[in-house]
Length: 133
Image (cartoon, rainbow, N blue to C red):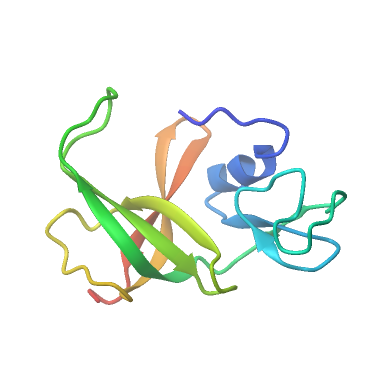
């Protein structure tokens, strides 16, 4: 289960509503995930991050098939995808591919965000292939 802290709480609250939001620097306007105390784009030590909705559309950069789980509650095998979100180059999010390990996956495949409800009022961003990619 995710354990939100002060910096990640807005992300997880939005995910519970099935909305994808990403931190955006008030100084340079760049998105950052996860946010830190310094903006990695402009170096501001006072980035004034605000969480902004994003489309959830992206492309697969890489993936791995997990065949052995070391944590309870994860049915194997499952696929983790590294997705570059459409809003900004190098804006990446990792999540489970809901299409399963036999999906016709390739680098550059278009995906869209989906959400897995893992507990009452707790959802985790995941991805689905667009149009069977």
